[in-house]
Amino acid sequence: MKAVYDEILKIGNSRPELKFENGISIGELNLVLQSYNLQPNEDLFEYFGTINGIIIGPGALLGIKRDLPFLSVEFYKNLNSFILSEKILPIASDGTGNIYVLILDKSDIRYGSVYFIDLHSTSFCLEYVVASSLAKFIEFILKFHHGEALNKWPYNKKFMEEFDSDLFKIKDAHLFIWD
Image 1 (cartoon, rainbow, N blue to C red):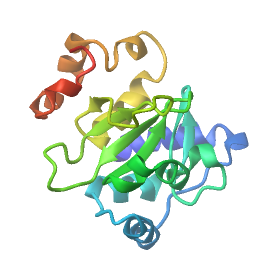
Image 2 (cartoon, rainbow, N blue to C red):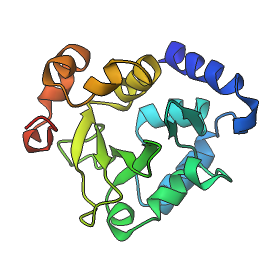
Image 3 (cartoon, helix red, strand yellow):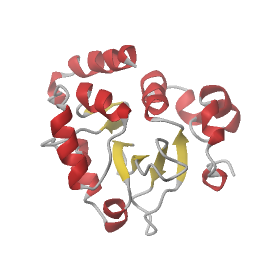
Image 4 (cartoon, rainbow, N blue to C red):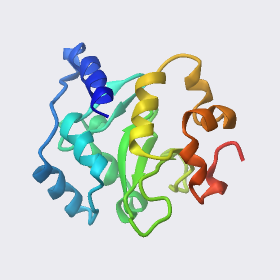
């Protein structure tokens, strides 16, 4: 993952107007996660230790303790009672006010996978699964944040079978967007 994060850092450093900040410490991350009664995931240490909020493509990868709300995990986590009460962590936004969340409930069969939540909906629930892991989600964002693949992810089953075959191991088939 280091190479993927290095690419994201290049994007961030090429846009000084975004006030890109380097990552946070493990201690800072643990404090935030504990405040929401969440257990850390190994991927989170590497992710937030390197990336701490950056605009990429039409959306953003979120950060901890950011002064810009649209880049802040805390802003989205505290947005409504569903997001606050579930063992999920907002990790990205799509640029239209919706978010992607990482499942952090180790007792959940979906643990470690990434889901989309439509914040414009009145239901506030996990709408559909978009990646089998944080690493696959970040890889997609980096490789395909523009261009033809953006129209296929996560809507096209064949594309998803090729890009993220582990997605099909998740026992949550009713939340595939193509079903």
